[in-house]
Image 1 (tube, rainbow, N blue to C red):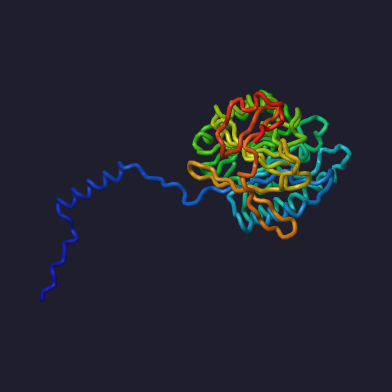
Image 2 (image 1 turned 30 degrees about the vertical axis):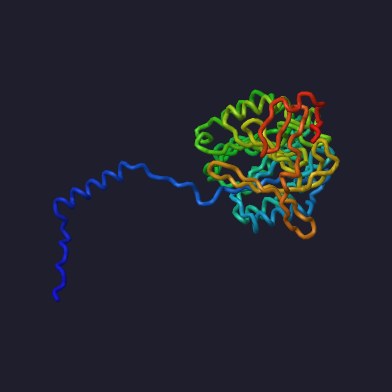
Length: 358
């Protein structure tokens, strides 16, 4: 049986025409860019400090760092302030420097060794903008600029004023780190103007998620903190501006109470404390648990899972969102739980701080 004849390696005229057609079609077809196979993951922790001048960190802080490296393995970590226990002018410079060294040893160092970028904002205990705490602020800037807290340069967009205010980008997640160490931040033309410029920049517009990280919240959520000085002044007005500038999530600390909320189109993560002094949510007498939150930024949505951490074993227990109040009323306005629709004027007839009866 004869073998079939070999096909000539030299294409005929018709083959050349077909090849040309397919080549032109491929060139004119837009390249399809599929979304990443895995969402970008961030871990949020806050208020790690103990008593004034202490370089000690509670077991929950150490466990959270361990789980970040071994269990959650995020793309970045966000710290919403109060990394050390400063804000006490009586403390010697050496004590403040020792506290920053302890932070680097317990928190920043292990994350840096694991290659996990650490994005931090100053809290009132780290470097308050009030003149009485200028020394603390100077030493905070000195320390963080020296170590960069493990923040890789490839993610930095603008670090001219690092760590007071700066921007970073992780693909479709843009983060504006803002100096919110006191209530006047929200009424400062300079700071608000900087925030507008950051959130409306070309880099921010290319991102699907625009996150603002600052210490003081827009709205009160904790007992004992529902008063002037403990929230951003005129926070509701700033929230409306943030929405107009495309912000999608505002992450804050300071109230030592965990509450995942929203106002309008803006999500609000009030990170619970991992250090000392957890506080009850408004209207409650039970202190909020110590928490760490894992955020998965999907292409068109955000998933949050928050855990309590057992101080002895380090065991993680998810926090049930359904067990939290659907609405909190504070001096600057109300916050609804993030799985609920916002209700305008929901607290209009209530005394500030009181949630409605179930």
